[in-house]
Amino acid sequence: MKLLLSAETMRMHELEAQAQNVPVDDIVKRETLFSEGQKSVKLRNEKIEGDSATLEVENSFGSWETVPFVRENGEWKIDKKGFADRLMQDIEQNNRQLDDIINQGKQP
Image (cartoon, rainbow, N blue to C red; front, side, top):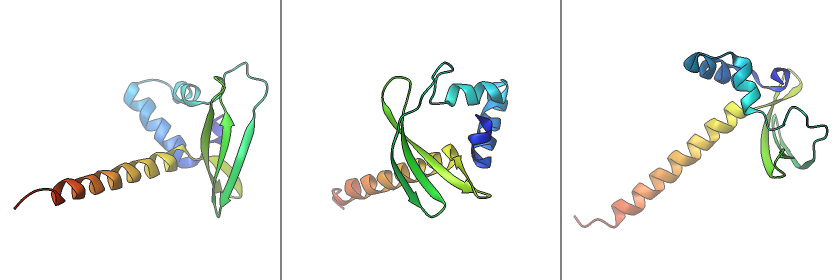
């Protein structure tokens, strides 16, 4: 599984492993979408934009999850770090918009 992860994602997992004092393999195993005994994978809705892509994957519970990818050295790698960064940016932007709405309603 580690071969499928982007370099930034591996660094993120290594830091998490250090913080929890566990092997990085434990983090990678816990974060995977697939169960150990899973023999097939269902995919849909591939979207490629330059060196970034997403793909929906059916997990072991039968739910669909969007998996982010990044192209590194000509190979597609799972990009959980990039996805986490984009999610944080979206949250921060939503918080700023909410702050603006709240502040507009205040009387001077």
